[in-house]
Length: 200
Image 1 (cartoon, rainbow, N blue to C red):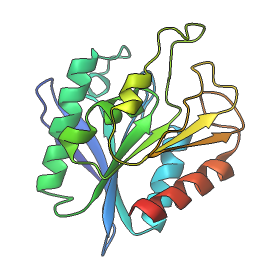
Image 2 (cartoon, rainbow, N blue to C red; image 1 turned 180 degrees about the vertical axis):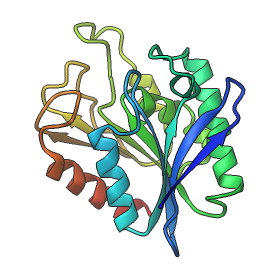
Image 3 (cartoon, rainbow, N blue to C red; image 1 turned 90 degrees about the vertical axis):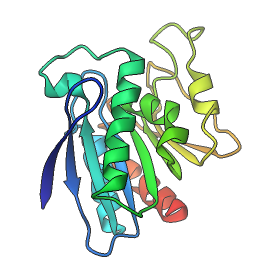
């Protein structure tokens, strides 16, 4: 049973699609990509995996999406809205549960940048956009490197946004396909299952 929660943020209402699991041992909160929604196949897979592992799940729509806009808000607004949503969930629906934050593409960047503020115990990055296509010099490696908790990156082998390297607490799993992560859903399911079982 999915509950739809509209949550006030400094930049307008966000929307959380919340699935509470009875006897949950933790929770996963995931954000969408810049131009997509919470129905993206990789987000759906991650949510299904989490619920199978007795974890409650919230899929979060940023305020610009709730307002019907396609173009994403600036990074500072995305981060502030995300923090407000996670704080709300931690105070109420997901109170007392260890939290993995994450998302796909732009949502993964937000989760990385805010991992300290949200108190995440891990960060799940689906199709992390390491750099704009064709511009490897414009790297966002620092956003990944700044995360101090365990990170899983699931990346398409032919993703034009680049391939992040593994790090001391960062695992990178390469799967078939590109940035959409639609080609090998079983590989995504396995990677997320194995990592979540270690983290939570």
